[in-house]
Image (cartoon, rainbow, N blue to C red):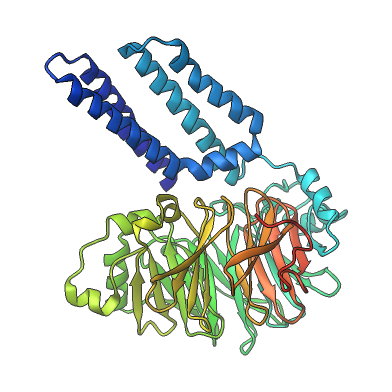
Length: 496
């Protein structure tokens, strides 16, 4: 995982620096004035790094485990208070300080990714929210029996509990629900076609992990991405028949639909591919576009895809934005003029005729660049919303140039997002806290929030019903958002 590697890199740089300072402290040949200035500079640099870099984690950890955070802080201060100012005491202080810093960082990080959740507590809390209706959830009696009809009576329900994604069927009264862990190939995940008005299961497929999809109302064909299998399914939405299955050279991540085409972001070369839903055949980009993407991205693939459903292009972002921002591959000046400066975001047209790259300035914050977990495109306002999970904010970028246009501070753990274009609202769930933020697009600030369950991976707005569909550890939920955040007066929870 890129963030673990970056933490290891930080330790690898930070600890030797402190040890070097300790060695210098013993030196007889270095003037005392220079030594004191050097040590002060190193301490100041350390404080700046910790405050700017690890502030989001410290805040999230302290809010979740307040007494543990106080205990860790006291433990880190004891050697500094009791130890004499010798080289040994400084090394001890530095070592315990590093433990005090990186333990909460790693705990918060792991809490984002499938360690432990109290399902019963989240079910009880969600049940208290009048706006929420359970569509397909382990919180419902009979849910396990419904799932076992598809995956077998002896199968474990662990993977089926991992609500992953929703996408609206070609028939607007139906919704597809996909479950599962991204890298798990066991066929004990489910893809469900649900009748939304009655919340009853119409069809259920046993599959490996479902990671994305979409439907074309014209052809009545739907695309479902099986990430762990590096494959996709094309389903006839009317009959339920699987009319095509295709194998891909890399894991598909998310999909965008335009006309009869389905565009996919891939975790490796060729990074993007499209499926003709009429025939079920997939195709990579033509050589010039494929070469441009490969020169820009290298081997790591795209982690997220977003598109305005009315537009003829998609946006994809790297799993490792910091890597592409700080160390881009070299491109000739004429290529930069044609494709844009190398960076972690790309805009690709559905016909593969155009590709444009965008970067993020390092000034936007180290943690903003470390993980992209959401892209929401809005052609009308000429905006692209970049969901920065570890920074706890949404960066607002220009749709065409990727230039920064603002930021929306939320909380560490934000993930995914969708728009109510008519109501000028943006909905962003939080994987760590379980709260869904409602953002006013005029003021670019959170105006309300609602608890929808921890582990929130997905949100999709349905303009016909003025609801959002959420995939969280509480299951698949329908949330009535009528009037939510529209007046600017909170009605469900105080904004941050």
